[in-house]
Length: 279
Length: 296
Ligand SMILES: Nc1ncnc2c1ncn2[C@@H]1O[C@H](COP(=O)(O)OP(=O)(O)OP(=O)(O)O)[C@@H](O)[C@H]1O
Ligand SMILES: [Mg+2]
Image (cartoon, rainbow over all chains, first blue to last red; front, side, top):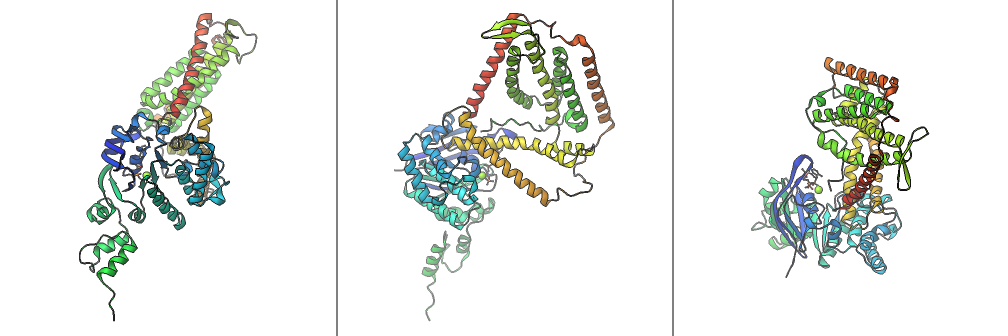
């Protein structure tokens, strides 16, 4: 029985500066162990929405409940143990003198013992492949690796809900793979993952549920298969589904419409619908 | 997370003062600066300050103005306290009364109060100028009166960088909080300054590359996209403003009877009240500011 982790009730947010309406009447329930993608154009309100999940922003109307706590009454520091947030720009997050210190900051704040802190640090270093960078200054390493460090720094806190804001933007193939592995690992560990991204291929492969934002409204909340096959919806938000999905939708060889999410699925589908002509 | 930023930047508007050419505003602000340093007379400074508030009203920038004053005022209160017990004034000092282990001096409290007024008369005019002028217009105007291009650029760039840095600081602080930042006081906030400064240096580095790639250092006459015209009215206001501040400056320097340091007597009780309120005001602000910054 999945339990409710985050509930938004008629959530609205107006930024005081310039009275910009960034969210309007969003209703949403996120349960444990869900892997969720949040998509939408630039400025549609994705970051604003997820910043409500750990109390960085407070609703200007409506409510957000995180594991039973109304975020309006909680400090970000108190919610930090439940919800981890990896910022879009790692430079905003890192400040320690070495990668090791950086990884210890979060768990130390949670009040863990020295041994536990070190154990978590070691696990994170191993998982993210940061062995050679242990004593490097976080600002001296390349941007993609810095981003990994910022994820590792949140991972060491083992939050029940993990928020990633554009984890693969500007990443090369190797670090993108690490992000895939991280999400898979979090899935196995039973965490809830909320991933804001413009990388549709990543989302098609890893998420179970997609939330589509447009003009500060939540306009769709469904599986990636449903969202990507809804050409009208895709068009209205100016989002291009993964090419393999578009090909699948238009491929005349399949009897009925097939919504494909990965190359592997495509290969299987082609093989079964249209067995290679034997000579 | 918005609350931390204090924008010392242009406040959009279409008041009479907004429409004025930047130069008259700049010269009047400079004139007031000189005038404020030329006198310690509380009445003169008070009148200048009140006049500044009239302009704040005319420009319709009370809200932004008060946000800056809300920070500046409590900090300036330290001046009153420090001056009262250790006046920056030629001896001999006249003791008024004892305040705990300290002695409050007549010259000190006079000097403290006048310094407070001096700061406020100056900054009020400066803020009216900054908050009603588009940075690019200021840039173009300074350019026109022969300010060296590079110097001019540094000046306007700095003005524009302040709000950016404040914003950045707010984001960094929220990142720290979302990792469960513990503790209070400057010790906890200090680490957040690291990313802000590294970010600022990085930004400046990139800016300089970008500037050079757009021929920043080239010689020759530079034209400007924004055109700032100086109407007859602007000239008249500028000349009148400069004359008025200059004449007042000359008057306050020449008229020795305006030195009230020994005639404006503060009774002991009043002195204690002023100094105590100033001290309490500052400490309260300090505590409030820190708890505000650390609040979620
Ligand atoms: N601090 C702020 N103050 C005022 N307005 C803001 C602020 N942050 C964001 N906005 C505005 O709110 C709206 C939603 O912004 P948000 O950052 O949530 O979009 P986003 O979907 O995350 O976009 P992106 O894909 O570019 O990251 C935009 O119009 C943006 O300009
Ligand atoms: Mg965003």
